[in-house]
Length: 350
Image (tube, rainbow, N blue to C red; front, side, top):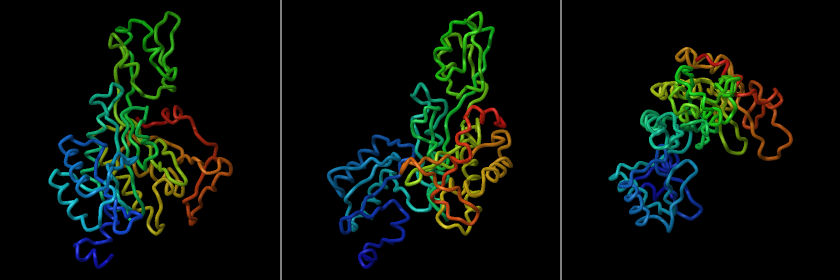
C-alpha cells in the first residue's frame, strides 16, 4: 500500500487525518465530504452525484453528522475525486484530533421555530476553525436554532442552542390566553383576571409566546445562544451542561476559540481525552473562570459537570475520575444528578 501511495502522490498519514476512511475491501476507501450545517447547493450536489457515479459504488451514505460519504472509492482514484469535487468548491472533511465539520439545523431562515441563524454560525465556525489540530482528540460543534435541539447540540463537545428571553408589554396585552396555551412548560399562567403571569424560573427561552402573540405584547428582551459544553456520544456518552447564556451570534467563533484554548492547554500530557472528560477531571470552575475573562456578561455563575448516560448496562455507574486517573469511563450521578435547568438559568450572569 505504501508503494502505491507514493506512486499516486498521496500521503497515507494525510489520508488518516483527512476525510478518507479505509474500508474493509482491499484498496477501497470511503470519502467523507465537508458539508457544514448539512447544506449543499443543488449545483454542487449535481457534481457530487457525477463524481460518485464515476468513481464510487452504487450508493452514497448520509452520515449522522450531515456529511455525504462516497463509498467504495479505489485508492488510485482519491486524487481524481478530490480534484473533480474541487471544481465545484466541494471539499473533503477531516478525521482525527481536529475540529470537525459543524452540524446545524435550518435555523431561522425558513423554520418558524428558529430563533438564530444557525447556518451562518456553522459556516463561520467551518471557515475559521475547521481542521485545526487539538493535539488530543476530536472536537465537534453543533448548532440548534431553538430548544427543540433537533441536531442534538448538547451531545457535541460545544453545543449552541438558540434562545430568546421574553418580556411582556402589559399595555399591549389582550389577555386572550393564547400565550398560556402556547407555552410548553407552564412558564405563563392565567392571573385572576385572565391576564398572563410570567414564571421566569420555568422558562426555557423557546419564544413560543412571542411567535404566538397576536398583539405583539410579548417581545424579545435578549436573544442569542445558550451554550452547553462537554457532550459526546460513543461508548460512554456525555450530555453537555450549561456554561453560557444569550451569547450573541457574533461571538460564536471567539467563544469556541476560547474553549478550544482551554482544552488544548489543560489536556497537556493526558493523551487522547475528550473535552467533557477533561471537564470532569479538572472541574467546571476552571473552564468557567477562563470563559468569564472574555465573556463576563454571558458566562453562568455556576454549573454542573457534563452528565453521563450509561447506555451499556443501566446499572453500575462509572467512577468519577480523580487527578492522574484515566477518564474515558466516567459518571457523576453519585453527586446528585441533574440540577434542574431552570435553577441554572437563575444563576446565569446574563
